[in-house]
Amino acid sequence: MVEFKIVISDPTTGKAHQMTVSGEKAAALLGLKIGDEVDGSIVNLPGKRLIITGGSDFSGAPMRPDLPGGGKRYVLLAGPPGFHPRKKGERRRKLVRGNTITEEIVQINMVIKTEEKEEASESGGEAA
Image 1: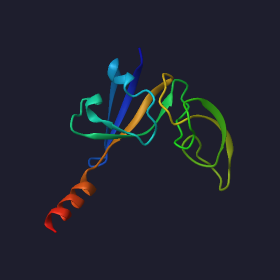
Image 2: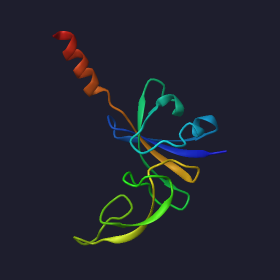
Image 3: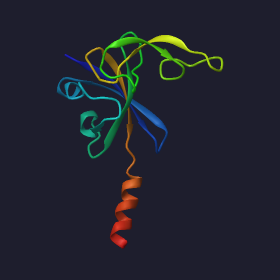
Image 4: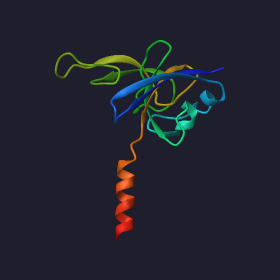
């Protein structure tokens, strides 16, 4: 069965928490892409929304949001994720993975969606 290590970042506190998800909850993440929103009940945070920001596979290859699919490929990179240039203008061909979560993914990075913007717009609508 599929098992993922989930790293959840909380932008309000600046801290990150790790947990392991397996079984039906992990199967619910298969096929999702970077940028998709997930219900927090998958990782025992009911009532919260999580945004997938990235991840890596069993060999350490990072996921890139601009590559479709879930396969690995060599891509010429000029910046992160997957390559951090040491000199200005440096580019290298690196092995990275696409933006879709598959069985080969080991770690998934997520961030808790802040509700401040939505609350401000809702309260502005009620006052008018």
